[in-house]
Length: 169
Figure 1 (cartoon, rainbow, N blue to C red):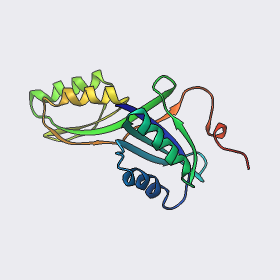
Figure 2 (spheres, rainbow, N blue to C red; figure 1 turned 120 degrees about the vertical axis):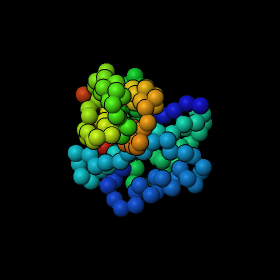
Figure 3 (cartoon, one colour; figure 1 turned 90 degrees about the vertical axis):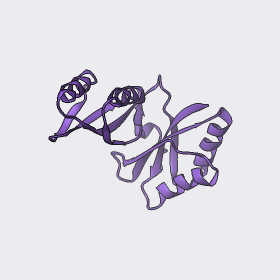
Figure 4 (cartoon, rainbow, N blue to C red; figure 1 turned 30 degrees about the horizontal axis):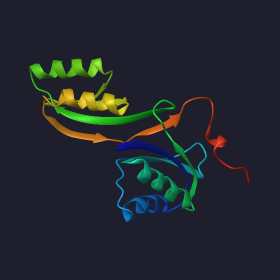
């Protein structure tokens, strides 16, 4: 099973997210991560979708996405040709002696303490999935009260930009 990160440029119109998500659900494919946001051009949004499957399934997903009317371009964000990041916020039970240990772990990962309460700390961390997963694994020895992940987002490396992918009218 291989994972693929699709960066999909779409027209910023009502229902486009529903149509993309519907494509996955109709065919029984799972979306492991999904982020969507407007680009520097308000008429275009970028969806970043993480999906897993064998080569045949991933190619089928690409072909089906290309058929959608709102899709402008699909770019695969391969690990060596792109930069991907994810953000998490995690609230950890932090009392007594555990508080300093948790702060030390956060410092090692260059995470930020964004909220301090009497019995908890809220920590923000940005990084690739391996870094995020390693951080969570270390915090599991403490009581994680809440955790939220944004999902992966990313861009291709180099000096190219969105205009390289959009056809001129």
